[in-house]
Image 1 (spheres, rainbow, N blue to C red):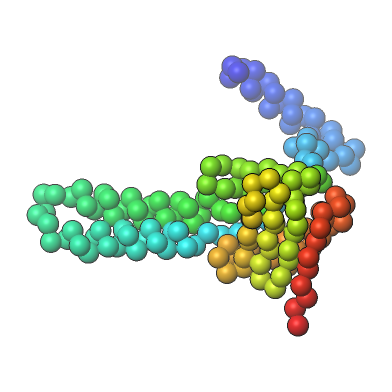
Image 2: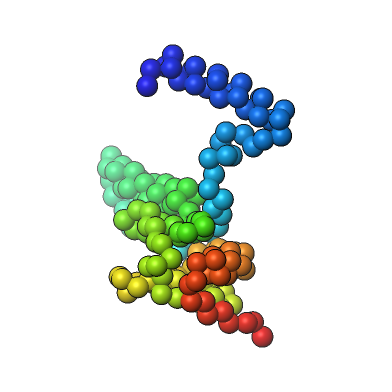
Length: 172
């Protein structure tokens, strides 16, 4: 798209949002939403491992000649990668009306209610068992740093609306 076209689209979007706001309607960016709720966590296990590897590189290779500074780059790269994973690449579960979406190693993975065998909600964890791949999505308060109470409530609504088997354990 050309820059002139982009500027024209932004200008028209801005004007349309002003009039929609005056009329009490949602903004254009908000009206495109499908009502899905995203619950985000924080990945800390892999970043911790990468920081330890980076510090290991610093400690082991510090006795090398001072002209050889590639070990500084290697150790620093591990630490920067750990910061990137900790701050940017956060685990999430997006609960929509008729789908669940999460990030796996190979990218985002989306499942429909017909592909879900059972949703199990216990004290500090949520387990979503899938039919075809015999896989399970596990979200925990300790490992993924997710608000499992909020996640459990959204998944209870999802299971009720889509006739998915739900196994909820009460805390006691």
